[in-house]
Length: 513
Ligand code: ME8
Image 1 (spheres, protein in one colour):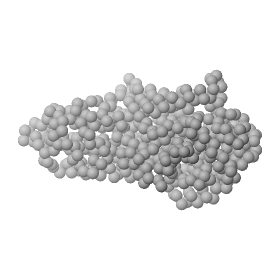
Image 2 (cartoon, helix red, strand yellow; image 1 turned 180 degrees about the horizontal axis):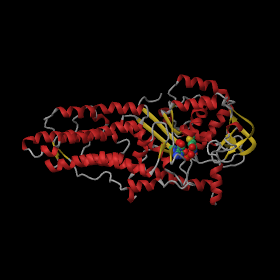
Image 3 (tube, helix red, strand yellow; image 1 turned 60 degrees about the vertical axis):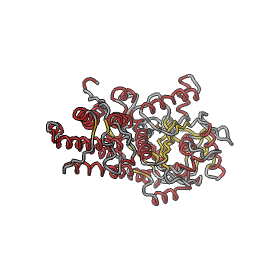
Image 4 (cartoon, protein in one colour; image 1 turned 90 degrees about the vertical axis):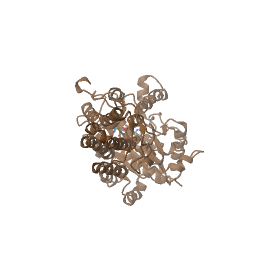
């Protein structure tokens, strides 16, 4: 039985590349924020990411580079790991489809499905897009080109194994009907039904003989497994499915959430559930198809030269500025526009002006008026109630937004705390209170309310901006950082001494970028 408190979240496995752009970071940052949020909420989380290393495209690139495919992928996989490290991605496992355990698992899956009669040998005649590793029918082409990338397709004909998707079509539709939350957003479900299921599912080609950089079919070694059956299996091979130690599989499967880009929703909501049905396994609870980050309405593309390596943005503006932009700027399920100027505006506005300034001012005042010691004196006024009510109502709203995967909205709600604190400073005018010795207890209380509100906001913010929040916890000198400290206003220890104020986010001058 699956442990009630476990939570399994995945990103797609990435094609290894030396040219990752900010769009590639999008899925991984969202999944990371969700994984961290669930950990903070007390779940036993398993967060999986990795690389998808087989296929003709990789084989061709290795050939061009004059190395073996294995040497080629070994070298560039480290690029993905380095990028995720620089973005503070807290994955629990990084799977590579060239891992021995994965290879063996896929071989067994293939054999199981063949023995069951769900995979059969046939002849493939079709139109193949090499960059997308996808077969298309004539009717799916757009102006004779691949509908996904717009490039030429080639006619190929070869002996191949097929997976009987058609056999499971009715069961899949029934599953969609009985599990209305399985695909989100709703619009993607309609796309799947109208574009792929209603016209009738065609059986899927699951092996190739024209290249050999893939997992060999054990009982027919001319064939290697075609990439999607190989790639999708990663979500269960990573947990030890069909291996000697399948304890993780028992604990974490079915996945709670697969987060994928909109262009691969069809593989995750048609092919993958049918594979699982054929294997008699439970289906993931949710597939969320997110939109893309676009530049000037179009693709982020190396050939267009319209992006920097994400590590350059991190170097210039800080890791949390990049994380914040990606999490905050893209509306739920839709495309979002990336521009360096928008990144700078978000950083200057929300991060430097609202959050950074608040923490800096508050700590500065506590140091200036009370030598860094802040005391809960109990001298409250009506104006405090409004602040405290807002702060204390935030956790439930954030939980609801996160349940709906509305991450940008969750962040907005958390920032309401910081915006409200800044307003509270204007309302209470600590600098005026400081001039009156009789108001010392009131001044203390105002500063206490501010520091406790900052602490609570920061506890909530840590899944999204872990580095900045660690720095705030240090500055306010508090170890009360767990979600279990959100049930009442007043965990911050009265009489505690704050640390030194440090600039969290420098304002960026646009002309100096
Ligand atoms: O599709 N904006 O790998 P991949 C947002 N190996 N997301 C983007 C993006 C953009 N501009 N560009 C890419 C694959 N992505 C397969 C997956 S899973 C069993 C196999 C996202 O490296 C894309 O939508 O092409 C996808 O979710 C992820 O990057 C990996 O894409």
